[in-house]
Length: 115
Length: 115
Image (cartoon, rainbow over all chains, first blue to last red; front, side, top):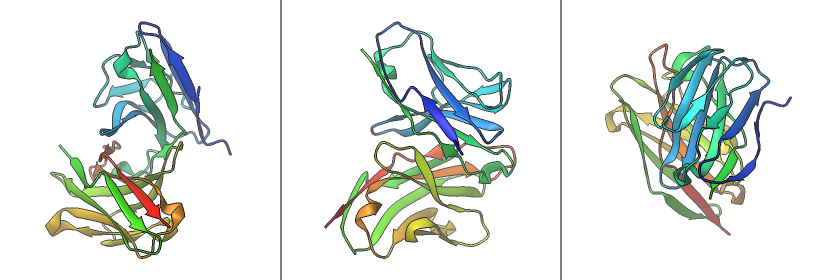
């Protein structure tokens, strides 16, 4: 039971480069989410998706792009990385059956450093 | 808009002592409330959630939380701390409305357990 996986787990890149973080879940969950975790800020929602081909902005979407062509995958792209995007990124998914009661299941995270 | 405030970014207790982590929420509608735990270098996992069925909610690993509407609080407690409880704890709130699957997280409380 793989659950929810993220790749890569660690990434170092340079300012201005494009970076894609991958997220894959095996539960066929409808909802998927991307968060960033920064010291003093907790987790902040970047983008979320209610189903394949349906995405919407969260609290901090600027500088990020998402797509969801398949239910199980939800990649996050930094089109031109900046130092302020150095963070730990978490992907999560939920079944989408219970509204606000849904439990979100989190991946192990990707630690991204932008030099 | 809903929000969560966690009082105390760092709490330190002795092994065997009471653990109390504080969470206050703000929501314009009846909320659903969650506590998640994050162990070092891992993703978040659900400890417990308040669903309005009962004000005292029991979770995993001996943790429980009590919903107090009059105080807009959902504090997390454990009678006796164990070394393995050392982690970061996040309180989160979601809207009880049927279409809102998004969570708003607090900034987290780091729990240290001293031998």
